[in-house]
Image (tube, rainbow, N blue to C red):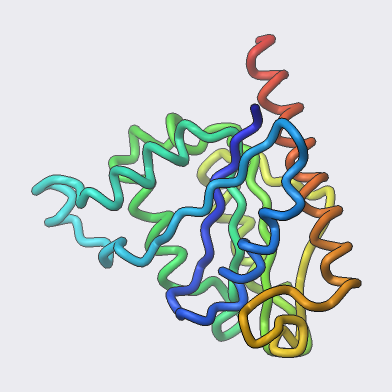
Amino acid sequence: MTRIIGIAGSLRRGSYNAALLRAALEFVPQGGELEIESIDAIPLYNYDMEIAGFPAPVARLKDRVAAADGLLIATPEYNNSIPGVAKNAIDWLTRPADDIPRVFANKPVAIMGASPGRFGTILSQNAWLPVLRTLGTRPWFGGRLQVSQAAQMFDAEGRLANDMVRDLLRKFVEGFFEFAREQTTNRERS
């Protein structure tokens, strides 16, 4: 079983990225599992909190990501870059620094995103790459998914309603699961 943790980098109730992540559930291949986790309860990083004891939502998410075969980030794009709440969540997962290898080393990671703008989330996705490199992850470059003009791609209930985007999402999800499965198999053989 290939298990992927998915997080949406937005806290908005009607988030297009959370909707995109939910839509991805439909395309999880047989033998795979996508578990969507929330970053809503992750507090702003504060070293004083870290030394006093990790907040329970942080510890839980950290353990879930560490135990997973991969991480799927559905990222918005804020001011041409990474949304602060998503970066904050990842920053928490890197604390203490000695834990970075346990959580992130060679972890397959894929990035997708939806934006109401016309350029999708290309700049945000690119901004994630140095972060993922620093953490020692294994980003998947087999596909990109950038949903532009997202308000027109989802219906009033937040369901993905555009057939072309649905097909792109299906190929993206299947490709990433295959990559994560191969990486897990290679690690087990080593």
